[in-house]
Image (cartoon, rainbow, N blue to C red; front, top):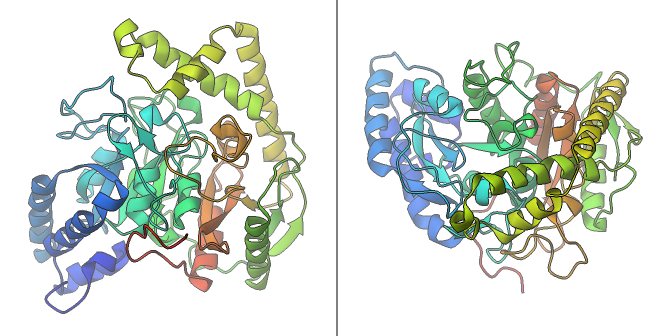
Length: 473
């Protein structure tokens, strides 16, 4: 609580900046409020795997001095943030969820950490991820499983599961995730928060991901406005990333207050091939109707491509094989068995098969970019299933064998490198969150944010107040 009775642990970045500017609250108070929430909730959900309390309070004290002098470094100066454990942060370990790594402290900031630090944001610590981010749930041999705050027996998804849970419980305000096959959008949907994967190359990263041309850095937040504030910092060119691109919007939130009139949205309930839980399909259909009520034109149509799962697996499993090849016999025994299983599948693939996968990827991208000439956005469910039990890669009562089978709406847009976001749109009868996805053409991130913001302003998300271990029986 601030001296004026405001619960700083529930504030967004814009509210905090107003309080800092007026002197009604300080960054140190807000940072301590975020740390208090971590203390209260993290034992139940295991979102954070490292917290730098001393460093955060020191940085917050410096931020308070700047605000007191009327000279903040940016609008998010003094705002508490978290970093995914795959991202290097100077003075913090980067375990990558892997027993093959150590607790040695990093010497350098990766681009998102550096840009947030330079903007005065308060780096609280690191959030949990599966080993090297290889799967769409969050558990590993070093830190264990992260749990869903809506029911702690269930997974929050992954690989940015720790960041999504931290966002849902406001253990910090802005949360950095990464998405190579759905790793921002899946946990956003499973926890009921907002997450966006920007156009590839607009949010630089270094060192590169294991499959760098699939990987997008982006925010997980409670609302698109905070995501835009974060993107105004991390969405800037950095020479260290060989895939980084220029041309980012000067203000990622420039169109947030625009209505949806004139926006033509293609709505596909299943992309023509996915099997979707009926309750999730119903909530997403309702969301499409609400977007129409807000002024958008909704056209029910499939984009016309077949499932690219085999194409994605060729690339993704080959990345696992590279991890395997970089390990000696001793460290190979420490790897997640699922990651090893993927690597073994790729071991006997030919160079021609990989080349053909890249060709299929190019054709998919061409088809989606052509589709976006007729439709501004494509709307689908974010995930076709509800959260399932922790420590499982697939629902344990299903006939699925790997996570790609239930992430059918996610990886097509990593292959195409287009922007895509997950927006919360209600709950199943069991009280579990549902999200819908909006994807746009390359470099059309502003339009994705605009539509997401209009929806969430009109239909605010309901968020968990505390982790709930036994709501559902």
